[in-house]
Image (cartoon, rainbow, N blue to C red; front, side, top):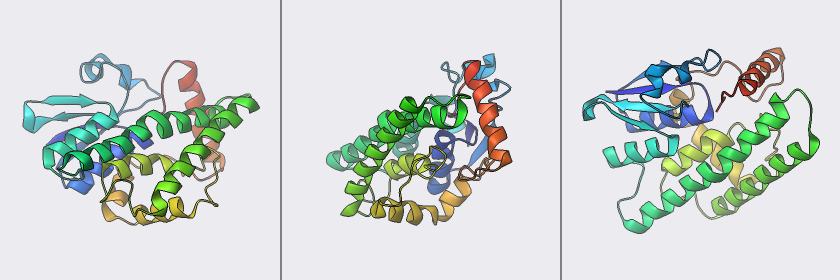
Length: 232
């Protein structure tokens, strides 16, 4: 059994999707980021960085793993799934996983901050991060032009990137002119395990929406930023 400490964010959903795809038994513990549960002493003993997600593998002497990319690698290697066994194939998956960890996630996260969460609109910052998101999306689109998935067969690289890319509207970034990225986005969205994963835990809002509920969510995220928290 794996205990998953998480919240309804792209990084959190990366792990619940992977657990569903791997058919591993797991228990979800949803942390309230607004109540700073991720900074509680009991959770810092699991993840000293005080961020979600984290797991504790009860079948491996309560081994704790934090950082979403590291968790994906751990789960893939534990099961021998969602990762090729040959050196080159494994490297290719890790390259595209690192592409998400070092690029897609941070840039979309900053786009969210300046486009959605800051009370004042700092247009140069919005343009900077949305533009970098668009550049990274074009890289993905180019890769997917001649490949069904990012690194051979469907893998943790697809899970990691998809969990962020699917929220592109929340970052204010359009993908209408990126047909290969849209094909990949829509194809993965139909996977039953992915549907289960993004609903465990379910999001409080539709990140594609612009309604009053979305406005309140953005306001709560802004408050967390002001107190040094994260809504990743």
